[in-house]
Length: 392
Image (cartoon, rainbow, N blue to C red; front, side, top):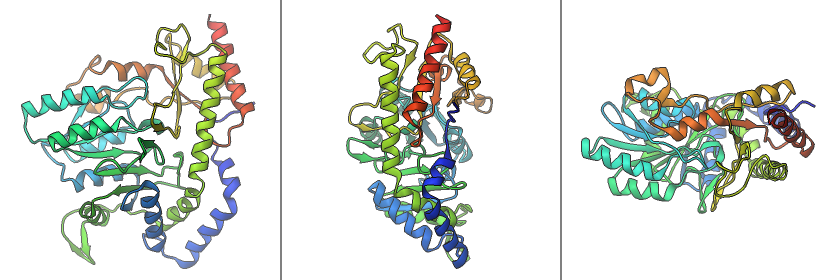
């Protein structure tokens, strides 16, 4: 049996007629850049995210970049984020010439640890008051970070919050949708995302009208009106072809996310039944070889990734075994940002963020896409059981 990590062809097959019809409409009306189709999607995303404004941009990376620029983060400023994330989070901070301050993550959610965050903020403010401009919590793999304490500390020290919700559109925390809690929220529509386009694309959401207006100018070279520029911006516009694809897919997003969650629960059930994993307070010392990605209380996990932890230093061997049995997997992410060569200038070293470092050595994503069948999942579980039987 073949079980790919993701099967976008299966998704397309189910919505083919709607997608093709929408693309044809754009080709016929020839309004490819921004325009009414993009505006309509922006309204729908704002409503879906329970925010007042949404601004389409060229990518999730640009969403982060333009959000930093909108908050006037620049040279000499500091921004806190997690070292366990896709490169764009740290890369955009670097590209506005601000300094990155990393904070370790929690082992259960892989998201930034609020207690460590508070310590970092207090230390930073003692050293250089007023230079700490923003926090970028990442809602990794489809589950939101613990936002209440993050919001509390941000208000106390007058720090802005940019939610990196690139992987978590539709996720919830205490009834709040991803992107709606901070000053700005950033989404990615990269094809592999839960809501993915047919190319690059991104969106920024906010409840602040002045920030929304500034982002709109930033995406078109800082243009206030035709050929009149208030500041230097970027060429970062969402095109109409992507907008109509995303508009079709948005109708199915909650259904797809629900199916991902159901697939995750089925994995959890099977792994626990097979004594490959343990659900309890001491998973680390349970004797089971796997740690599963359970949803935290009061959070809606949309499972962009179903990311297990493989103990005993066997992650790579298991991945190779699954590949040999035609099961797709991926490692997100094998090296935390603080250990990347390009960030050596920050002065971090191995051991500074032990949780992120440990997770990067254990993490492994299994197929969880909506079209996955229980038969396919059973095959995955059976092969993992076979692997550990051989290793015992």
